[in-house]
Amino acid sequence: MSVIPVCFRTFLQDSPDGFYPQYPQIKPALSAIYLGASLYAPAHRADLAEIASGYKFPQLRSIILCTEDAVHEQDLPLALANLAALLPALEPGPLLRFIRPRNPAVLQKLLQMDGIEQIQGFVLPKFGLHGLTDWLRVWDNRHRHWLMPILETAEAFDRRKMELLRDRLEEYGWRDQVLCLRIGGNDLLNLLGIRRGRTATVYDTPLRNVIADLACIFLPAGHQLSAPVFEYLDAPETLAREVELDLLHGLMGKTAIHPAQISVIENGYRVGHDDYEMATAVLAHDAAAVFRLHDTFCEPATHRRWAAGVLERARVFGVA
Image (cartoon, rainbow, N blue to C red; front, side, top):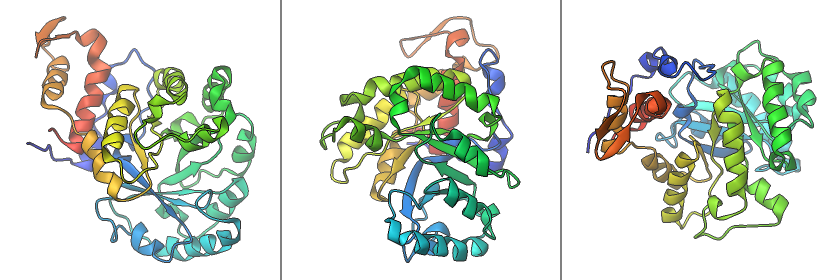
């Protein structure tokens, strides 16, 4: 087993955009791949500071401090008070920190808090055409925060509305600020009145087609998509299988509901040795137009974007 070391600062300056110029790319200064398994933490927790500082779960790459579904309405004042006390005390570090505001009014309060510049951005729930102007109305980008909208309303089932949303993000100048779009699988299943079993991946449900549509709408436009949560803690084999299917659908990054899920998710992001060798060969400056490697047909003209993604994953998660 070999693991490729990562130099975070160097990699952020080494954009693979030149590998696939035929695609419209807005490469942010922070790549969504660094999110890894993003752990949700209710913001009213007593140990919030220990978690957000990176001390409690040092293996974490990113955390989302939640004031929405994970917090009861009566606990919202405590959650906001926790965040107000936490933010000024946060110090820069490798942990990527985001906050999920309950609604636009809560986002407006958060943006006015001292120390809000210490977080990387916000996860916007129930995001869609309906309500987009409410988020826009309160948005203040003076600290250049990243945004991660969650596609989890009935609009996500409507391909036409998702295409319009993609276009609106471009028109309103938000595409450069969106680190990735997150798919809210449990909310979408709830709209269908479905809860999957512990042996079923999300791709064994009607959401398989929804995820495929979202991938086809947003990925060619230069957006990244992250994968839905897996809600069972005692079925790591199913989770591992789902991560494999996430990657096959072009999804990178996944919500974790418990620290035990982090290693399962991120082990799934490690790159197989054959894929690493093929990706390296495809991107070689002297690569043939068509060649065979590991009994696989390789054509740089059509495999460059895949290869760039594989090497990006290898830099962060290593090679198995």
